[in-house]
Amino acid sequence: MKVFISVDIEGISGIVDNTMTSRTQGDYEKGRALMVGDVNAAIEGILSVGPAEITVSDAHGGMNNINPEALHSDAILVRGRPKPQSQMAGVDKTFDAAMFIGYHSMKGTHLGILSHTYSGGNIESLHINDLEVGETAMNAGIAGYYGVPLVLVAGDLAVTKEAKALNPEIHTVATKEAISRVAAKCLHPQKSRGLIKAEAIRAIEDTENIKPFVFPPPVTYRIRFTDAKRADAASFMPSAKRLDGKTIIITQNDYIKAYHGFLAAVMCATSVS
Ligand SMILES: [Zn+2]
Image (cartoon, rainbow, N blue to C red; front, side, top):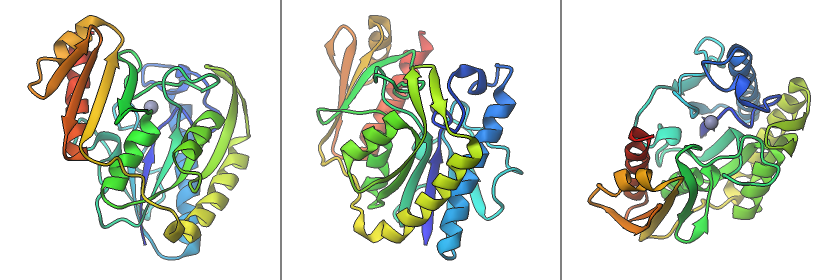
């Protein structure tokens, strides 16, 4: 069994605002410790089913949040940025299942803790083939491109609903329930780690029954930026077509090529922010 785990921070147990998610903030060390606690719970669940090769991809910010020594010693850690496939770096067709831990809902979600879509200050909305998506669908599409099913999503209640809307077969764990974008009712981390471990076991046992999530080609990314200057910069890319003041589209026959176009467009947009 080969399992790929992408780990973000906003959906991690106990985290409700940016004081624990950014390297420049005072409680960051607590946030990164909570992050590794949730991912280790998933790893323990996977390994309790049977032997497994596990790759963990650090998917937040600088992608260097997980302390290598704190991670379960049986997992390979992918860290650093920028890199191909970004939050999904390391996944390929040799994997049997993918899990997302600490994930959050798309930008603008009502009652979604720290809701945003990849780059909160730059992106107002993202559609792939006319489906409005957040990071869960976008990254599930990368796993799906390689024939790998997304079997477990853990994060706040809003992202679990977003995952179920993509595919009701996906197993989910809600670690907290938002009462605003930056406040939530949180389970104790020990409690949510127990739930993550238990659901990881069920998800691994159920893997053969869960279909990969695939965006059929040709793949169109429609990126609406937060202002026109960001779209101005992104539209310098030869593959980009300007739709309106704030929006560009990128169409490719290959999902990963389209996704990499998206990453490059976001880098262009960020350069003028
Ligand atoms: Zn993040």
